[in-house]
Image (cartoon, rainbow, N blue to C red; front, side, top):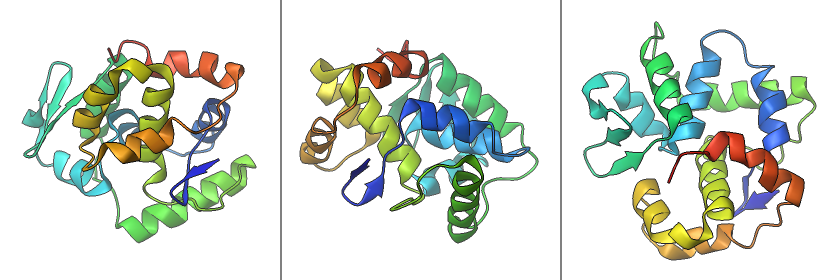
Length: 168
């Protein structure tokens, strides 16, 4: 599944993928997923732990709403020894993990976690587009509207619940 030529994961793929991500890379992947933040923002977060205030991540240009998974992911990321690697290395790592997990890697990019989170939020909370728009920091609402055209199955929507629960 993809949106704007960026790979969007389904919940069962994330579950499988997380089992194939080694060591400190797992919390790094999860913080990218559960915050929906840009790669560069998560890199800067590592040096700015005070950006996290309870269940809000206060970046310089916006605030990101977090659920319990997001708060946990941020804490685990901040406990890592090192921040994210160069984005090219991260992209190569993601492709390798997908390959090891038997997950399609066409159009996979460092934006895949961010776009997956946005797509899942829109799928589960279609009446909260403005809040999602603000939290994701999208420049145009059109981006989020594109997510609403993705065809998630009922099983996918049910499986998303454990990931997005508590976001609103």
